[in-house]
Image 1 (cartoon, rainbow over the protein chains, first blue to last red):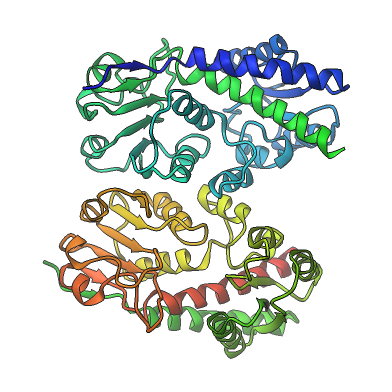
Image 2: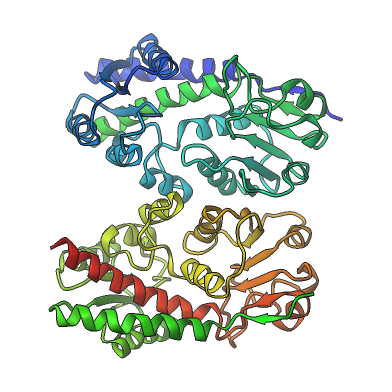
Length: 282
Length: 282
């Protein structure tokens, strides 16, 4: 077996942010400060923490963070109004609506309302379609992070069999498409999949995107396979059983310090990309 | 083994068209005649035949066929202008741009220019994204036809392993998503896939969407598997080796008379859907 490789996401994120710094300075010197609007609805503590982390990460890099906090009781209509205002706001380059919103709100309608040019979190169906067809500007951030880590560590993708466990619109589906576009053979699994362990055992690359702690077992991992854990469950626990998977894996992302920090840096990168794109169009 | 089932597409298409007749009459009586605009660029004989077949199928049902034939030398810009005019034309409910266009034209740009409300052929990235997220109005017609045949013959999909051979934007990718949304476990294969026969041998449902005659061999088919052949190669030859695959398959679509006729009827259905939607919005 090859040497075990720890896919350190913190290092990838640091490198990406280092590269962004110069770009933010250049933009600012040209009179444009990149700005990410974050929209938080209600008072869910985890969501509040995530939004705060994202806002703080922006500010550390010199990206403006426009933080909008709406009451849990807001209607879909009023949320849409807020999003439309952000779409119109020339100073805002990216919009992030923190998932999940309270259940009485039509979250999909709210996501779809985000202008494609400002969809830096990659949540719209149009953005997903563009990503799938290979010309999207802003793929969903967690899938983009997974690809960035694979690229950073030169993990071979072409011709490999990637098995994705999960099929959400912002994770399982887009990462399936990104890996497919990089010439992996892609199997997408989910709660109705039969013989999941047998399917995962075939994978050269496993993406755990299921949202259940330690769901992916160590003996499902083919010796030498690459395990990308996109899960982040309470208590800093991933979707893969790290201790057990690590025994078989050729490379693996830890939780925390794996996919998570790179996800935030992709959000920052997309915001800077959007600001540059806008400046170049003027 | 179960009884062999011939998945007769001609019968499915006849049923769909029968149902559409009443809807077209109802629309016409309310003053709206559904209208499909077909755009053919250049003089490729196969393309010309396809467009003609589609136009004739419209007229047989009382759907207007607005046939636009542009010279092969047209620029991307002029083609976009034509599409924008059709987008604006209140009398046109659906737009079909016949693939392929001459190579000097940016076909993707032309597809993307089609208004989502008129994208009855399901070629835009936005339409694909909507389909993938489960709320698209007009999935790409061949994938929609495959699903219609599976539904017609009550082929179980949930929990089954579907292997798609091909990953084009109008066939392999959308059919992967439609099957995934119906709770199949989906593997998408392509030219860079390693051990393709071994992967196909695992499939409960095989979709041949590769564009190469008799590419899928009989001994790749697990006994009892369902073979959906979306290929249509010169000489009426499918992408699956019918005679050989039929020996193992539990059910199989013939070529011709399988997916092809249903594809056209889905185009007609989407055009009628679009006309009804427009009328109901007035």
